[in-house]
Image (tube, rainbow, N blue to C red; front, side):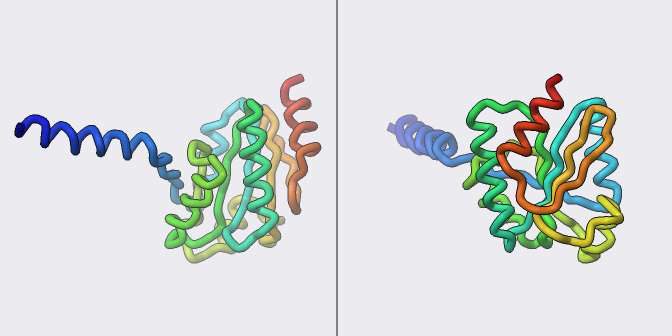
Length: 161
């Protein structure tokens, strides 16, 4: 009897763990993080996207990225939230909602938002969404405003040729 009473809660716990989506994990973005990201994707193209909870077009982009990933598009995507680190639980829930919990994800870890923005791009003044298309040589093209399926597909086609 004792064995069964221990076994059943253990099985129930395991089943609950399998049923609940894994939480998204965001890394703390600091002044040197852009160099860490670029080094991680050395010789690989990637799409760097700045987003925020309070940005409706950003959520539309998240839905687009989710759709592209579900369609089997294979590309390196890095998401950086410009929200305060205290918002991490909300941001994680949004990533899980869009099925992006496995994406390389960061969150600003300083109250000096302007300083962090400057380290990403001295010419970026905070407009959102903001994206950077990196090629294999890490030349990048900055785009302010919501990305479209066509824009991303053109980059995907170009990066695969």
